[in-house]
Image (cartoon, rainbow, N blue to C red; front, top):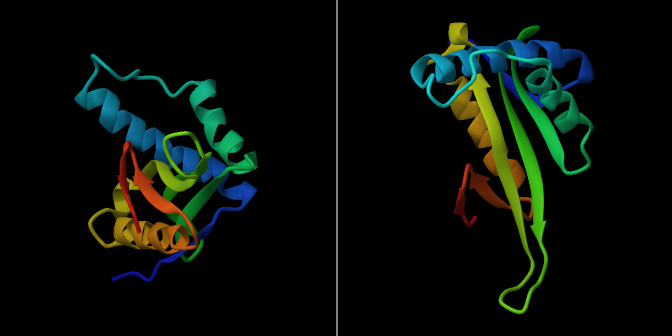
Length: 134
């Protein structure tokens, strides 16, 4: 089994992350053409750069040697104290994908475990719209 490292992405790696995002887009658009667009337009491509540059978001990558084989984009969300509840902090996995040539060998598990560890630094882990309090 290949050895993978999971870490925060470098700006120079974002084009490769977009290649994997395109693969994920194809899975969705082929499976549900009634919902998902089949093009990977410039607006979609630019999202990863905005996440990378964002103050409250990050891009995480799984690397095998010099090859980026998976990614996650995460958001740091703070819900301020309100009349109904106390302040809460969420670590949300917004996007997630593994290159089709590296699937079923543990890449996704390593990415999720990395995100879980990062969430333990004072955040509640949020995947999609569901929340699991750590």
